[in-house]
Image (cartoon, rainbow, N blue to C red; front, side):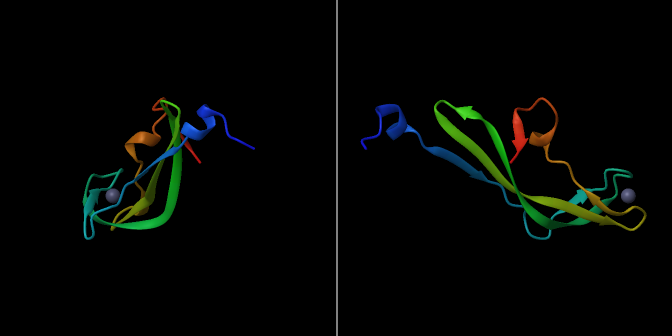
Length: 87
Ligand SMILES: [Zn+2]
């Protein structure tokens, strides 16, 4: 079967985001700078970029605060209304 021109032109855009090793991030509860660590890898789907499906891959980042234990850091693109869906 010969793919249509639109089908042949379809491709995917994958964006990978990595945390810099040894980086620190503020605790979301007290703003104290804490060492960050990756918890797991996540993928979000964004609205299409022209005809291309768009995905962003990034770790779920957590910090360990001495006062508030383990806290998950929200990524900016996951906030409501930003057009990304956890995939
Ligand atoms: Zn804290």
